[in-house]
Amino acid sequence: MVFIDLTRSFPEPACTYPGDCVPECRRVQRDGYRVSVVVAGSHSGTHIDAPAHYIEDGLTIDQIPSETFIGPVTIVDLGHRRSAIHPEDIRTGMDAERIIIKTGYSEKTSFDPAYAYLDQDAADLVAASGIRVIGIDTPSIEAYDGTGDVHRRILGAGIPVIEYLDLSEVGEGDYYMIALPLKITDGDGAPARVIVQKEDV
Image (cartoon, rainbow, N blue to C red):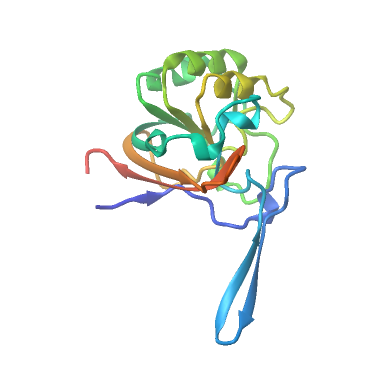
């Protein structure tokens, strides 16, 4: 059984979204063993947004059933996209239980605000689709200068969002995904380890 890891390496301080906590991992050597002190925000690296990220009284990360993040997923490859993602770009994936959007951002090694993002119409499509989770390889599913309305529309429909995936080793197609966030009590989001297996393997 061969799985592909879609998780960005941690920490990657240069890739931190402006204004977020800059993640770090300090290694401390003690009497014959090593302990690491990890400093990170709930949206550091590859992470999952819970509805509570934007929605008052929305589900927190520890309240979302684990099975939401485990199961079939369809990856839609948009090539090297650096502009808005419209409904017609992702409509073919809307029949799936889960969808991940590949835009080519995985090659970036520092933060670049010129990334692809869902426009409001695409967010409306996702919210009405009945999918269980959506993911993307960019730092956010919303434009860098967005108002938060894209997040509010999708998270308001109870759909968690996986952001900042490393999709460099996968192509378009159907996969089986396991994406488990840290179980942070009352968390608005959490770093996650995300892996997939090709469905026809």
